[in-house]
Image (cartoon, rainbow, N blue to C red; front, side):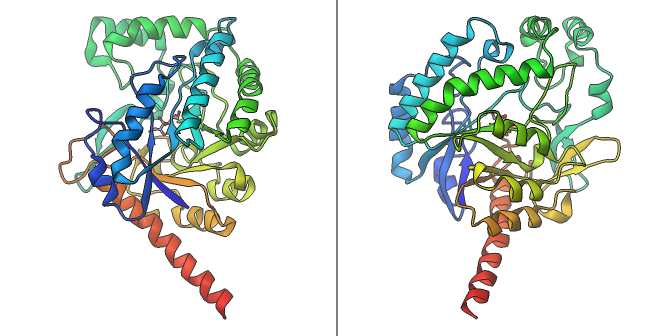
Length: 359
Ligand code: DNO
């Protein structure tokens, strides 16, 4: 298991590279050029500038999270071919600094969705929260209208300055079904995977978060069956998945450890975090410790260990603790503790297996 830490870049992140190297066992950052828009071809100079900035810390740049996909590709519009060419050229440039894995997602309009970013837990810390009934009952266009009149109605991702873009996107997706989205994903993968293979870069799709349709938008990377379908859609070792335990666990029928055991070497990147899922479908993010949530982190790490996992892993969203001011879910303290928890499980499994083999 090769541990990395997500870093948003100087000026964009409250965490510094100096702090990251002080977390035991972290060898690289999961990074991106956050000011590039989906569909843009990334400038080599900017990639190299980041490389120079990070080099003194001895951290590698093997994992990019994310190179985002332009909506026209997800919508299957004729303009997609130009954006796919840009994507390929970006891959070529990333290969020059040694990138090995790219995390991306194929979620229409939104990336992860939450209803609150700072919901208080019993211990006074705060964390990202999803209130299912609120999202289920929401008519997205009605919400757009409401926020335009009164910004107090807005939710994360629904800020007043995004409203025009949101209503246009909902309009564009009105006729797009899950079957269409699968077809558009296939088209993208068929175009991109030969380039990725030649460059030795694994394309690792991130599951949808939460893993079901919301606001009437199709979502397809949601279950074990659908991940199986994704991997056979273009059956090539470079077509892979970022197995995100927290995202997938918002469905009680998703058994993450079983997925690790089944998908094995098609998981070049593991996001490991816990959530507490309630019976009504709401969920809140918790510490990484198994007992604090409903996700059996111990079994998940054991499943990776059984595989002799050599891919990349990172802790995922953390709580906001000790008065830290940070990007929602991306503070230093709770994620650093998460890493130590993951190493604790891993190292003791390692000791046991060495002991067993030695005996
Ligand atoms: C949430 C992340 C996601 C992920 C993208 C990948 O914090 O796990 O935003 O980076 O879905 O494209």
